[in-house]
Image 1 (cartoon, rainbow, N blue to C red):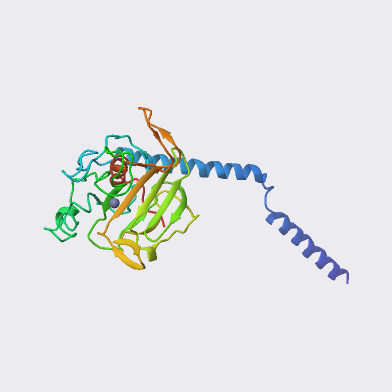
Image 2 (tube, protein in one colour):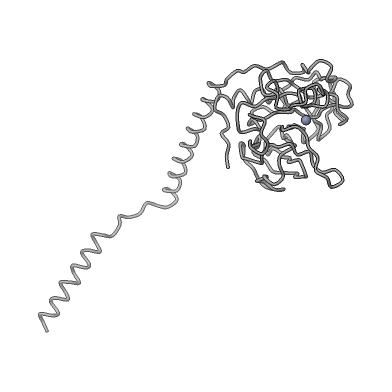
Length: 286
Ligand SMILES: [Zn+2]
């Protein structure tokens, strides 16, 4: 009996000793650990961000483009304001090269009946060409006429293939409109731009009204979707029509007041975004 009690005592002591040896060191206060972890994480994030920015700025690659406001001869009134209306945006297509040019005055467009192929090599080649304020029926106070004109910039994707290339978010924001052939995003930071994308294939959309999106996030595939007319599907050329609008009233240096939702020229911002894209900015997300 005594021997048994001794054995139990020895085992108990050994167990206590073992527990003591295995017991973890006094934990550091949780808030302190948490703070350190966040700080390290933030630092890493900042470094990554800085590195990305440096790569983007140092690697910005020039490419051939016609100057802003220089439309195809005879294609429209053009415009005069060459401000960058959306500085720092992500180029709205995921793949390069992409080709900004006219869908109407180039091969396959209704103003070029002599050349019916939208897949003509000249459509998929530099230089880029501005086509804001081409002759169209939509209202556009920024055009020289002060009344009507093309409200955005048309961009062909990498090749003449529909439902193949992703459109991506120009900046962090919220999806504020989804319709039969349009998606709009309102940026969450100054200068509060509204970006509208036309002609994505509806069935490929990865976002819905009210979604929060981040810069570079995939939205949908570029297609030839021109929406429905009397319930019948209409088609355009394979391209992305990209618009920039002011979300709130703004005053130009000459005193002209642009009311909220006014279309503004996207070409200068797109040239800048594309140069950064070619330099590594804005990898697609999602
Ligand atoms: Zn267009």
